[in-house]
View (cartoon, rainbow, N blue to C red):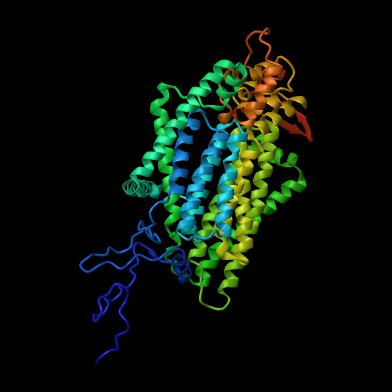
Length: 584
């Protein structure tokens, strides 16, 4: 029986039949994504040509990356942006992080933009969201002196930049897309080297003229800049502030920063020109369970949540005094005892929801309504648990004072609550937007956390507690960053000098240039320049209770409430004065 042969495929010899296309082979629980993802990938770039005769094709694997197409040769605008990024990295990043990180990121973003434009990629709304969000996160190091929120912001900015370059919609794609930039480090470097080599081979005279022009301009700047600096002290001061101080001893460190800027910007440009479509692979759906088998454990869990919430409402309406009497716990102990358990309960509930969605029944009428009803009820009940946990943390902070760990875990619990709200809203209306909505909420949470200045909030809350007649832990507050200086500056002496002495010493010993200085550090320097610390009082007594607390307490003292009235605990009772389970 004969078959009519169609037109030969691209690349086949005339008169011969095209080789049959191999069927897609799933590997390790990962299957090709939906047709929408494959169609979206085909719009971005041309697919790879089929392998020639005699070449073996390896089956897809979990680490196989469906890159859309090999990028075209690197263009001059991309190379110039990459070179500027590398030079700025070596010149500015060696003195700390501040506005310099945003300055370096701008030419790196331009390199990716030029490469994407050559590849024919269009700017999509979510790509703009990730790109703008990544640049906004780099504002945090320019505003805050504290290193921990700045670190979170920088890591999140890299993840958003990677998402902007790759583009992703599914859970699998969003997760791997945020890390995919690191997979282009080697390929991007090789791509850049080939582009430079080809351009130099084709235009040797042009490169020679460019090098001569650059050398002449550099010599003129150095000669006349030196003359003007020696002729006028004011100009020398301005020039010294603008030009980075690069010494010969910093050569290896500067060279490493140059290499990091070069490789990183090339990786970004290469990814923009040939992104990896992680949406091309998707996790294989789990085996659906029967309605009773799936719903019964979740209904039981919902009932347990409902009983717990009922008890919480009883405590709220009946007052804490009755609970303190029946449980023999102090006010602070009751608040401390439950927060960590409720935080873990919230996190585990999200895992339960993820597994339940994977194994949910589907295919029959009413299955979708059942899944939404059971999981929606669980989300709503978990939101009440989140509110209870945050209330306990509020009581906790009111008793012990605010610390870095406490504000961090409270922010984490609040973000988990936001994720639950997104699951309820997008799960019912736009499920396909849920992965990107959760990623955007995480980035927004990191940005908000950095902008509110955690160290500044910690100092303000503890200073306010002291004004309300409670003790203050100077030994803890003196270890905060320069962001805390405006709040600590309002303390009376000698508390003010004891709290600011170490910060002032650290600022005086460092000569931070303008591009590496945060706004928080600049404000702290100005405050301490106008009014320094008083060293005439001698060394500070940094006992646990703080200086001038007057009651032997501190940020970690344990106190009780009797009949709704704040009463300090007996200082002779040392049975529970440690902040167990909550290190600073």
